[in-house]
Length: 417
Image (cartoon, rainbow, N blue to C red; front, side, top):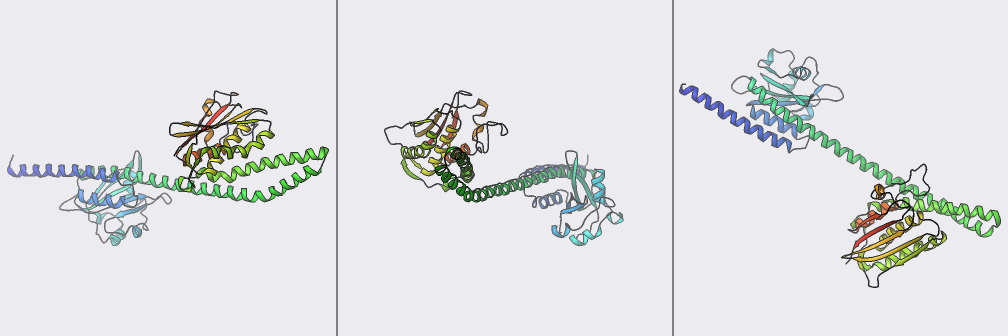
């Protein structure tokens, strides 16, 4: 082997090492970049450097027209190039895409499929070209091309190198597209959630006025009427009260999104909040013939809380216990100290909770009973509100039940001061 042969082999090995190191660099760079607009420019720069060419371009499939379009090209404005459709039939890129095969054309001027108007836009005269399909698994999503190799013609080694770049680039582009689609989906979900919240707020507000009139007249009729008329008036009043409860649930739906920033926190005894909630529901519990008892510790348990919201959470638990407990049943409200927390508990002897439903009942609008056959009214918002309030106070809530018809215990744990 002569000196010249040894030098050629050494140059070849150096080039091979350079290419392999650049391919690793390309893979790392492309897989860490998830910006769809930036990726094509990165890819063509890397392809240009690695193949020692004057330029490169990426053509992707237009989902609407099924033509190809330039996502990026050396020396060209992507917005201008985007307006040039490259047809599948009669174009070099279209042929590569359709046949799903690489192509090398070292005399582009003699090929009628070449689009000369692209050269005008990029101010780069194409003399030679190499192109490979960009694939995601078995699907071709575009074409990667390199133009005008410095100091010679494109070879099969260049084809293999460009195919590796194209494979990595296709994965990176697909990942960026998926991320973009995911962001759009989240934005759409957020928009729909805002629409739902606004609708509920408007509907609950508009229902209050006519319901107030119904309640007023029903109460008046019940007082003035006698006999059967009084019973009818009482039925109207009871149903109107039930509707008011549903409207309150609708009004409180925004409370499920409460965060710590929206709380009006003050240090105060939890006993005071427990008594306020007890007084709020005592008349309704007595009207059902149920018995509410409480057990509060003698020492003051002070917590940094938004008292009205914690009271609302307790009232929702008590209403829940009242709804699912039998007439003349017992409900117990307790407060006790557990380490650095205060535990507020509501215990009932009602219908209980199946074990596979214990965690689901805190989901928004969740109902244990089927909505077509259920016996207990409600929208399934009360426990969701309790959970939101507890978590906004950096606390938690959970339910326990021995099983169906054996009652349930709900606990709100709040950090003490």
